[in-house]
Amino acid sequence: MAVKLRLMRMGKKKQPTYRIVAADSRSPRNGRFIEILGHYDARHEPSVIKVDNERAVHWLRHGAQPSETVGKLLTISGAMAELKGEKAPEGAEQYQKGHDEAPADEAAATADA
Image 1 (cartoon, one colour):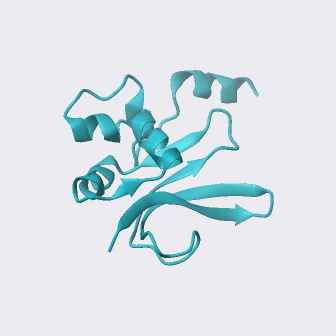
Image 2 (cartoon, one colour):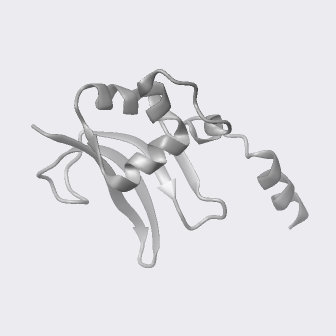
């Protein structure tokens, strides 16, 4: 079974949010998946990315192939750097799953509104 890390579209019409999932490459885009690895919401400014890097690295080590978009999201979250044994990029900790605090500039923007 070939496993791919890809996006699964969720949300209402014209208001998409995405799940980052590990799925069999033969299953349809919104079909059966193996595990949810995170969430991606591109409609917010800045985009909201929540990724469980530990599970993403697990799947990558076991041969899962990320789609082009998921590969970029994993690079931003620091999962690709973790896979290669490098230091995560600065600011990557805000994209990891379970990090509930807003970045300082985002918190200031919401306080002014």
